[in-house]
Image (cartoon, one colour):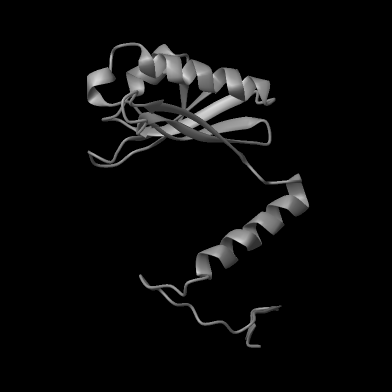
Length: 149
């Protein structure tokens, strides 16, 4: 162990790669889960989905995918096909997700979006911006929104 200042630091290789070993992500994820659970309790999230499907084929064409954890729901993805936008279906999807999140004991919901996506939609539903990452378009600004349920 080389000594750095007054601290001992174990020797490790630091590797930057676009071809990590097959189990690398799982190892990192599980280490983080254990760390979180030591401090905050059970960290298993419950999937919450509200799906839109084609009545003729049953194929999923849109909807919402989120997860509930520690009293909050995070929206991973919400997508409404172009031909269904501005019909109220997106609001209905969000209302159903919120109702289910409340039923599961969530007190808030949050998500992130880009400026070119649906900021005004979320604001109409009562979400407020709580964080922004600035930068050049189209990726920025990257907005973080929340809503108390």
